[in-house]
Image (tube, rainbow, N blue to C red; front, side, top):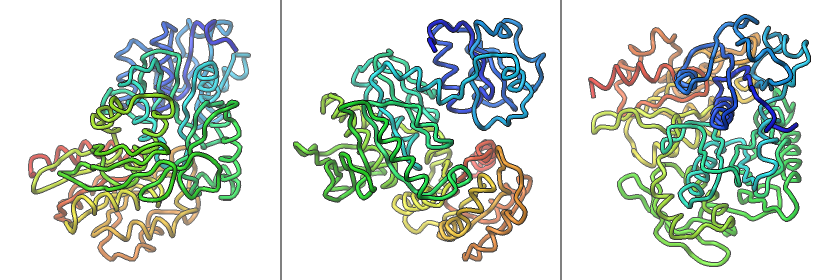
Amino acid sequence: MNLNRVHNVYFVGIGGIGMSALARYFNASNTHVAGYDRVQTDTTNSLQALGIDVNFEDSIDGIPVSFLDKEKTLIVYTPAIPKSHLQLEYFNANGYQVLKRSQVLGLITENTFCLAVAGTHGKTTTTSILGHLLNTCHVPLTAFLGGISENYNSNLILNGTEVSVVEADEFDRSFLTLSPDMACITSMDADHLDIYGEADELKRTFKDFSNRLKPNGKLFVKNGLPLEGITYGIEDDADYSVHNISIEQGTYIFDIKTPKTVLENLRFDLPGRHNLSNALIAMAMALEYGCSYDRLVSALASYKGVKRRFTYHIKTDNLVFIDDYAHHPEEINAVYQAVREMYGNKKVLAVFQPHLYTRTRDFIDGFAESLSQFDELILLDIYPARERPIEGVTSAWLLDKVTNMNKRLVSKEELLPAIHDCKAQIILTIGAGDIGEEVKRIKKEFSIAS
C-alpha cells in the first residue's frame, strides 16, 4: 500500500499512546486525520488542539462525512478495540482499507533506516532516550514513542524521515511487521501469556523478530539472553558495559566500556539500574549508528525522562511522590530497587492497580513477592482494559498472597484517606491502568501538606 496516496486516516482508538503518535505523524504530513476513542483524556485533548476531529460515541454518525469515502480513507485500529465495535464493524463490512497500527508502522518505516527497540520491559524509556540522542545529534529522524517524552512533551519526535526509531511491541506479535536495520532486545521475561500461551512461545517469537533484521543489520541483546548479537550489561564482560558507577545528588556518574575504547564520566539523571541499562543500550546503538561521542555525552546528560516512568510529582524534604507505569513483577522490582537506592530506609508506601485479569492470574505469586517488599501497600481493584472478569481473579486474592501485613484493599473513593493514614515519607503509585488519573488528585491533596 502506498501511504503517499492516502488522503484521510481514521483511527479507531486514537487516544492510545501508540495510535496517537501515528495520528500526530499523519497530521504533520498534511493528511486529514480523525478518530474515535472511548473517553476524553489529556491525549485526546492534545490531538483536538492540533485540529484533529475526535469523537467519543461508538456510532456511525460520529464518523465525519469526508472520512466515509472509502477510496481515499485508510482505517487504522488497535487490537485493544473489541471486534464488536460498531465503527470498526462498519469499516470491515463496507470494503475499507483496514490495517492494524503495527502494520502501518511497518509501512512507514520500511523505506527508512530503522532502529527498533524490543523487550518485555524498558522499551518506552530506551526508545525515548535513543530518539533524543539521535535528534540532539541532528539525525533526520522520526521517533514513535510509547510514552510522552519530558524533553518534547510529545510521543513523536519529528526531525526528518530518513531514519525511524520505533518500539517493537511483542503484544499480538506486532513487531513481526518491522524490518529494522538495527534492533535491541532488552528482556524476554514471560508476559502476554493470554496471547502466547507459554513463556517458550514468547521467546520463540523474539527469535523470529531477530530474524526480521535487514541484511547486514545489527542486533543488540542484554547480556545473558539466549540470542546471538552485540551484548550489553552492567558491570560485566559484555561488548558494551557500564563501570565505575557512583551517585551524586540523584545523578548517576559512570564509564562505558565499548569494543574499542572507554568513555568516561557520563552523567544520567534517571534513577534505577534498569534505567542505567536503558541508557547504555541507547548509547551503544547511537554510537554504532555513527553519532559522535562528544555530542552523545551532552545529549544523555540533558535527557529528562518519560511521563509515568519514575515521574516525580512532589519532591520535598518532607515528602516525595513518584508515579510509575510498572505493571509486571520484574518492573515493580526495578522500581523498588530504584527507590531504595535513592531514599535508603525511608518509609515507602506503594499504591498498586493491577492491570488485566490474565496478567494478574498468570503472575500472581510474582506480584505478591514484589509488592511485599514495600513498607506499606494499598491495592486498587484490577483494571480490566480489554478483558472480561475471570472468576476468582481479584485484587483481594492478590492481597491475601502478599506476606507484608501492612496492606489494605481500597476503592478509589477511599484512596486519599488511606494514604493519609499511612504517614509515609515516599508515596509511589504504580500500574498501567487508569491509576494515572488518580495521580492528579493525590498531587493536589498532598502538595499543600508537603
